[in-house]
Image 1: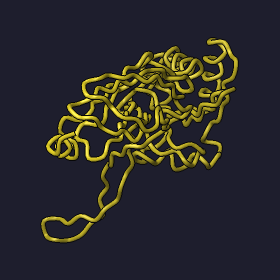
Image 2: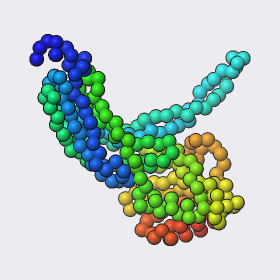
Image 3: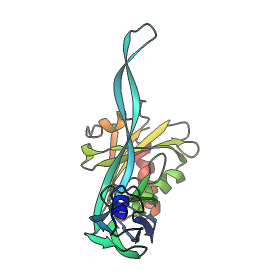
Image 4: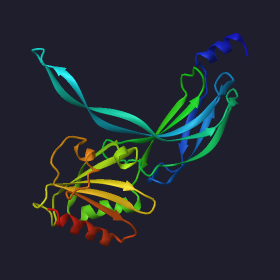
Length: 265
């Protein structure tokens, strides 16, 4: 390799590029994501340290900070902070060298964690592919995936709709109080059906397990900000309703939710 080409390679010009092809970009928590990664060699031979795929998502939290008004007086304010986290990571291939202009492909499979947030509201989940080349300019690829509800999650969402509730807001935040990195809050309002006029709103958390869906409900919660409901989930008092959905038919899930909400509104 000439000195000039070596110099181009060291600053990332003419480097290899990566393209991730997903076989099933729509899947539910716990499913396996399958795909392949194509690496196209650039104008020079390059050493690749490794290729990784990461399952990433965004989440939000409230941050308190000190602000000053027009008179210079300090006061406490709150802002919403957006963060990105890695849910899972998988090394697809170890070190290898690209050939000039040549394309190689590597298959991969990675499990979507059970705690992955659904693709609802502002929450996004994507696959970030990292092609580890020292000093490379273009060494990554990002592919958004659609996380669909599991069978039990869909049963719960269907039941709420059958009872006249509409999903009005979904928020994703850290969930370490529940033993998992992330959790979603689902806020419903009764626009029709038996609970219209009887309850203002129902807040729900869903925790996936392999053998069941653990559900936390709170009826007519008071507004406490983004994290208010979640911060109190470990306090299992009478205002918080914990249910387990296992192998039930749809009508059984709807009846269970109806009787539970009816007792607390």
